[in-house]
Every structure is written in C-alpha cells, then in structure tokens.
Image 1: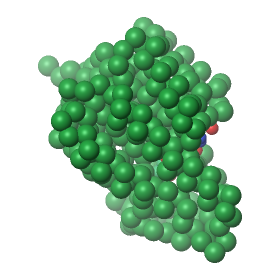
Image 2: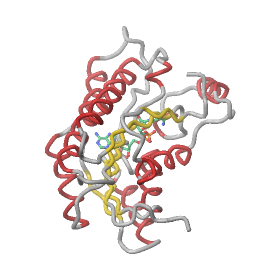
Image 3: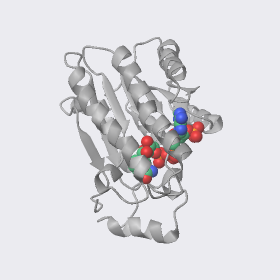
Length: 256
Ligand SMILES: NC(=O)c1ccc[n+]([C@@H]2O[C@H](COP(=O)([O-])OP(=O)(O)OC[C@H]3O[C@@H](n4cnc5c(N)ncnc54)[C@H](OP(=O)(O)O)[C@@H]3O)[C@@H](O)[C@H]2O)c1
C-alpha cells in the first residue's frame, strides 16, 4: 500500500511561506506528514492563517516564525526555533523567500539600491539558509536542501538582470553544496519555476506581458503554485534521494 505520509516525523523549514509558492509548499509538505515551520518577513496574519489551516486538519504540526533571511542572526534564530518548537533535529530546508524588482529595468537603468536588495535577499539569504542547513540538518538519511531559483536563469529575458544574476548564483551554490555534503545523506537541489500566478509574478506587469507569458506556455496558461509544490514534495521524500545537485526547471515547457 502507498505510504501517504512519507514525511511523517520530519521537520521542515519553509522560508517565504506566508504567500505564493512557499505557502503551497508548506501546505504540501504538511499533507505528506511533515511538521512545518512557516517563515515570513512581514505578513504575520497570512502566516498565522496558514498555520491554523494546517493545525486544524491534524495535531499541532505547524508554527510560524518571523525572520529576514538576509540577516545571519535571524536565520540562526529561525533554525533554533524549528528545533525548539518541534523538539527535533531539522530534516528539510526549502528556501522560497525571494524578491523581484517590479520595474523590470534594463541593466543600464537598474538602481544600485534595488540591485543590492535583490542580491541581499535572493543570494545572501539563500547562502545564509543553506549555510545553516548544511551545518545543522540531520545526517544519515532524509536530509534535504531545496532552493527556489527561476527559469529566467535559462531564458535570460531582458529586464531581469539583477534577479537572474541573484538566482544564477543560487544555482551554482546548490551544485557545489551537493558535492560538499558527501557522506551526510543530505541532498541539495534547486527548483526553478517559470511564470507562476503569485503576487511576485503580477507585480508591475502589463496585461500584454501576462498574455505573452500565457502564450509562451505549451499548456496555454500561467503556472499555479500547486504545479510547483509536488515537485518540491517529491525531492523532499526518500523517493527523491537519487536526485542531487540538480536544477529542476518546472515551467510547463515554456519557451525559455
Ligand atoms: N512567481 C513566479 O513566477 C516565480 C517564478 C520563478 C521563481 N520564483 C521564485 O519562487 C520563490 C517564491 O516566489 P513567489 O512568487 O511565491 O513570491 P511572493 O508571492 O512574492 O512571496 C514571497 C515570499 O517571500 C517572503 N519574503 C520576502 N522577503 C523576505 C525576507 N527578506 N525574509 C523572509 N521572507 C521574505 C514574503 O514574506 P511576506 O509575506 O512576509 O512579505 C513571502 O512569503 C521566489 O524565490 C521566487 O524568486 C517565482
């Protein structure tokens, strides 16, 4: 019989889980049996409602924690909170928190402050979360590090210079980390979606830009957060253990 709770007794941290893709991932990992620490930056009400939704369906298996992933002390506190809340080692990190400049500037028009913010959250944040995870995730099987990247690293669309550069660095880090974690049983991968209907995708986009993204997809629609979450879920389970050091582009086959 199929095991419907392959992540039972495992502890997962999902950053940026108050909204969008991170939220769907947290829900999905919980549905697979994981206990989930829901990280957010400012939207405590949304994070709390997600925890309540998960906890109403079962025993208390979700909690929330505010932390800016670009700040080392706050990332450390996030991991401390996961251990102390669930009285357990941590098994899974999913780093979904991220930002995109909704002005879609050319390189020449990119404001230095916006560039720095993108790198601070998307690259430094991923680095800090991966560093903490590499030092603290349980050894000996079931350990997982999964970062969200983007298919824009492959499509290299104009208007996405800082964002694509910030995530290209994440893809490089994940591939090296997978090798450095030799012998720990911990895998490190990145999931790189195409256009997904979230606040981040719609921010600053014209109707024309949205229609273009739909037209580029062989399925003739935008991705949904639930198109991405099961891929992360698979990587998180034991069934995904042979996938390591990979970048999985999850975009419905969009022309990238
Ligand atoms: N949507 C897409 O089309 C798409 C495509 C490819 C890749 N991605 C990637 O997928 C990930 C999720 O994107 P999304 O579309 O779900 O974004 P989103 O809807 O804008 O949600 C962003 C999440 O990140 C959190 N966050 C932002 N800055 C943070 C910080 N410094 N520390 C901690 N949390 C922070 C937000 O928390 P608050 O709610 O508290 O603000 C929110 O939960 C990102 O890494 C993104 O680059 C998205």
